[in-house]
Length: 475
Ligand code: FUL
Image (cartoon, rainbow, N blue to C red; front, side, top):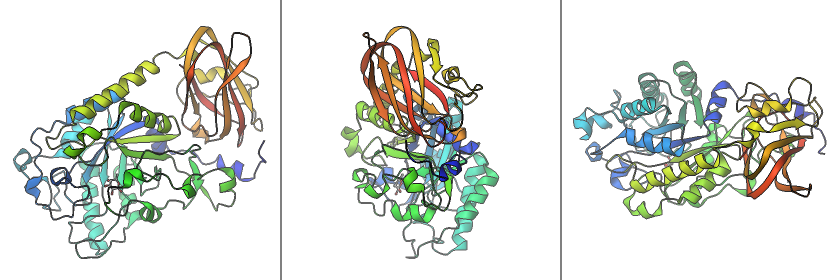
């Protein structure tokens, strides 16, 4: 047992807000990077691109949404404006936008088409709006640029229905006048809270935390309770990609940021906040479409591996699929997404815990082990306070081949578990350890070699305060 710190009691007071919980429950959602870069073959535009080059001739947002749904993604974030400043919607505040492009004869609105397609397809929609704008003359001029930025933010927050996330990039460089802008983050946040109270503000924002790399790398122990101030927007800007050097996919989480939330790390923190991780990475080497990368689309196996480490490792997954010059997801990407979804649906089709007899070695009399059968936050399993190590046993209806176990903490009551093990009963009656780990959080998925068994045990070996589980699945 670890020594009990005074701080542990404070830690559990940190839990998700409804908007954070909503994003965490989405688990996996997509990014679409699309702008003039798609037509110039660049990753960062310089803001001088003529509007006329933006010319997707066969844009079909329903095709994007169908492909995302096949993969199991629950939402889509569109780069409405990237660093080049080109707006995918007809903004009243700039000429550098779709209205001066050949797209739909200058009458088009990509944000409208994509948000409509998402709504029609039943997935959520969110916006990426780059604060760094290399086109606007106002950039670097303080309030004048903030006014411009807030006007655009208002357009996006009022004209396209409900948004699940407003995503602010950390990258912040020079403007056309050579000046850097000091962003008025508080003003931006207040505006979003007023216009889209249910939207999470991600990355350079208070709700969703950047995982610290763009390669798809993850932490073994991912905590959602972090010291306050760890990643305020300026700190994010300092850490994020500072040049378009094409190397971002090689940079993994730095060694100094492997542990963000262990209790030893938190001991001297001034305060704590719920800061759930989001892992953003691309299906291709670049964020934008480049025909030269058509043969470098990540394999289904790699995508699944990333999915397991993120969605199954207390981080959400934000997977980028860049539309091509036609305005379509490329056939290869579509196929990979479909294969990914098919595999996941097959793997998690039958949950043996649904029909198992579930018991615990202790409970508090009000929250029995039975409650982990339901996959929701209505009910949960809990022992008495102070009982930090417990064991749940699942007696299956009959022997089954088991390959996966899913664990979910009841995160409305914070993140508590620090160490666990999963065991299966062998025919001779002995228990074999199948997996062990540290953090659980909103979801931990263990994959192991198939074992034939009629009983499993989840042993919670240590928690900050007593563990609270909302769901266990056995597949
Ligand atoms: C980075 C940007 O510079 C990239 O172009 C991309 O948008 C990525 C998601 O964030 O900071």
